[in-house]
Amino acid sequence: MTAARIVGAFMMAGFLCATAVAAEQPAQDVEADQPTLSLEDLDALLEEDAIEESIASLNSSEIADIGGMALVLAFAFFSFTRKSVVLKYVSFAASIAYLGFYKSNLVSIVNIFAILQGTLPDVRHSIPWYLLIGFTTVSTVLWGRLYCGRICAFGALTQALDRILPSRLRIEPPAWLDRRLVYLKYIILGAVLLYFVATGDFLIYRYVEPFWMFTLNGNTVMWTLLAILLLATVFIRNLYCRYFCSVGAALGLISNFTVFRIKRWGECQTCQICETACEWGAIDGPKISVTECVRCDDCERLYHDQQKCVHWIVLRKKPLVQTAAS
Ligand code: SF4
Ligand code: SF4
Image (cartoon, rainbow, N blue to C red):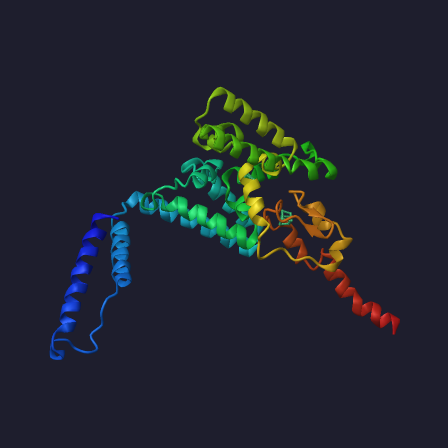
């Protein structure tokens, strides 16, 4: 309890005593309908004061950090709701530039270590961090791995690279292999957590995730591993995200509870247009794997395209067939 709270509690106790004494006085001393404060009311008032005090004491650079984070998250969400390719790439650019190179603020396995240990950062000095973690958790529960599909600077970088690199270099792992390799990231997540619980060594993050690259601060082994990873990503798109990312694995686990899932038509059973278009191997016939889908919108744009989606084409042709038959 802070000093202000202790003083407040004493004041409250004094106030209650005075109220009690006053209650024993003749009725003319106290107005019958005078409102009284409960302990909870006073606690809430003190809390409000503390929050106002904290907000008032934020300096301009802290306010800019909060504003920057809120803007990037809000724009990413806006681009998601618009289902626009152009806005998605603008959102990628903002994530890479601001969250990546400028702030180096990405969700990391280290955050999972901190949550496990209960050593969360002080709210007053880490509002942008809480915004990022809060947005990531809530959006994952509501829509799935939106963080991966739009906000993570490393994911944004590899998705942007994928657009620039010539597609003839790409190798698509066969579906049977892809379906098995996706489990690797869960094994890595489990192994790293076990290692951390056993040793308390959080520096393991340097060898299981490449997010440190945005700080441009790594040793020879780290840079070598990163170079191998990026080179391999030229050939296998979204390699790290699909098979190795422990944060992606953790978000994939949360995605099992996703509320607003992508709808499918009856025709998806046989049509494979979306399945072929999905760059994340998340579509298998009529089913979308919520743990692998990053809500990139590619299939949803097709899904609503009345010229390409078989569902709409069949619907358009139905009246003609019925007319011909009658
Ligand atoms: S899978 Fe990992 S690296 Fe890829 S976008 Fe998600 S958090 Fe980022
Ligand atoms: S194409 Fe569809 S299923 Fe595949 S990742 Fe994007 S939104 Fe998810």
